[in-house]
Length: 314
Image (cartoon, rainbow, N blue to C red; front, side, top):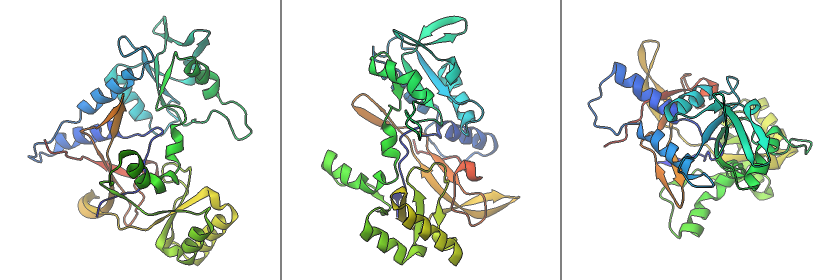
């Protein structure tokens, strides 16, 4: 059965890793399969970035905004910027002016039309309600119509894992059709009845923080002992609105070369939809993420996961 675990809308990563996996596989192994090349995925991304420019795509100046080497996806930031010919800049490179946001582009000051934001900071206000550097730099030019941010400010709402519980309903409401893929059943632990259902059989569920990233804070309850499950239950009961639960599903395994021999490892698939204008296209590059630790179902790269080449038939 195919099912969608969650959606990543705010700062999705992986296209450069999918391409790197392709390059590595082609160097060492010829599958003999006629597959679509991964390179056009970068072309599609570049077109979408330019199309977001407030004055249109012609001569749009696009930059990639990154935290720098401290960001776990720093490799991808450099790979995408290099492939698309974008300046790779940090927060300290931004200069607010009355007519927009500027930066020094190799000794020449240029006004920025589009920022491809790949920063860990995604909030306009911090925990105390104070403006973050992101608001200070970007919000004015965005509201003034001189700057576009990809993905737009506010798109993180869709990254709330509770939103995933309603995706099938959204498809039916907005598209008036049935979803092609089912979503893994997701429970709102702020709802008393749903919370009681989950706590009554906690071992059947995976508990996730609503705003967690990269697998942080995820509890696969079937793998926990009694004390571990009690700690999860206490966390849920203490602040139920901070958590969701998903029914535990059997994640596929794939033969994986580990220390010189093939062993099964759990995998998932991350496809990429790139939107621009009124439509969206699926990129010809997809990332198969693999949990390299024996028995683990956590495939995130920051938790020691890896990637496999994914062949999309031509």
